[in-house]
Length: 183
Image (tube, rainbow, N blue to C red; front, side):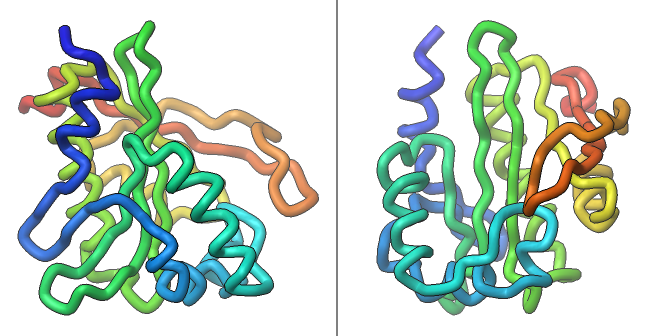
């Protein structure tokens, strides 16, 4: 079995019908700041970015320093950067965790489901993972709907699972297994 890192590097650019998933660079700071500076957009996921410099710093520290498995979401037709999606691999358990954020101006268009399906294709067809899961703050049911559209099954809620924006939040867990994906 080839290494997960190598296989993800081989698939660092993924094209779908409407999107290009690709590495994030400092050139994406303006597009990311559009949603990262919006309280509604970041409410359930991370601290709102007060300046574009903070966005540039976060890109450098998270996406550029360790880019494997982390993708910017770009609309193929326009080149517009609208969000990010990543998969974090647990090699010992042959599993992965998907996380995502999308500019609210593009919610409701199926872009996140399309990006998620592309990541699941890589996870199950290329990486041969057994399980992929995702987590959302229970106060954000729209994120759970994305997970359901990806074929994931609700597995349970972890109470006070994370400390986000100065409070403990409950997280709902969803997952899909390789055999479910193949159906």
